[in-house]
Length: 306
Ligand SMILES: NC(=O)c1ccc[n+]([C@@H]2O[C@H](COP(=O)([O-])OP(=O)(O)OC[C@H]3O[C@@H](n4cnc5c(N)ncnc54)[C@H](O)[C@@H]3O)[C@@H](O)[C@H]2O)c1
Image 1: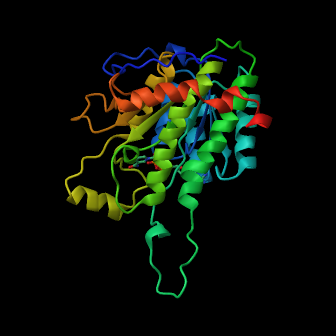
Image 2: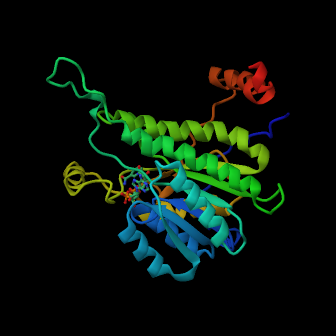
Image 3: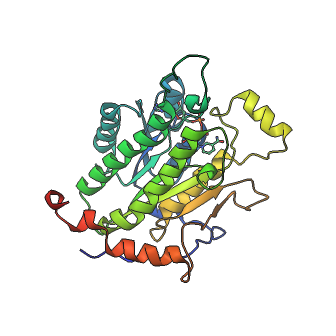
């Protein structure tokens, strides 16, 4: 088995986006009832796609479905439940005009107080609640597994472009004190992308992440938003996150990139290619990377011999 060459090269995000490639595609989005997911649902529908989205929030999910009409289907879904996500994907497959799934966005996520660092006033430490990792990383793995399955099953040929996008975070690139689970989860999404960009490309499946800076959505409480504002933070825009997803989905040459979602005084369109996932030719990591690619035995050796 030979790996298709992964192509380095920064994407120019200033180029106008031709969304015709997305027209008629079937899209699955998790966490589409609010925030960046909701903007993504709107943007994909505007580009002519059929969108099936899942969310825990039934009230807002139903509202988004009612707002956008017959090109959208809301499926109540807790992403931590494999069965719920399976139902989401089966609904997308049966409900979409093409009976296919072409683009999947793993976007649902939470943040919040993290008990991992808490030192309790008790004799023994309390077992920590790891639900942030469960939602922000483990559930993304469910979404990825389901996406791959249905990408490979749908009735188009292997040359057909298919696209998996994860909503990671800028904390997958910068140090972020005090939020260990969230940080590990978003680095985990970035790590998953680094694996997939070399692996699923074999089957014509692209993998990319978007990495938002602070965005004023319901994931940040009013108190946290006020605190950030008091420290001079400028927020990035949820609509620009959706535009970045559309850019990725529209261009079949984009694989293995992370687009930062940032305020427009940093990037005029509100997103840019972070370009921190490649190495220079004289970098020791580039040399180790080459060896790793030639020795990736899990794909080369029969499972029973591993
Ligand atoms: N807002 C930010 O500052 C920021 C920054 C970087 C990354 N992100 C990431 O962006 C993504 C979207 O978040 P957002 O900012 O739009 O927040 P949001 O709260 O507006 O949207 C998140 C959505 O996910 C849904 N959700 C949460 N848990 C779920 C579950 N178990 N099953 C199904 N749906 C669930 C929520 O109901 C909500 O609709 C998240 O992955 C988040 O980690 C946000």
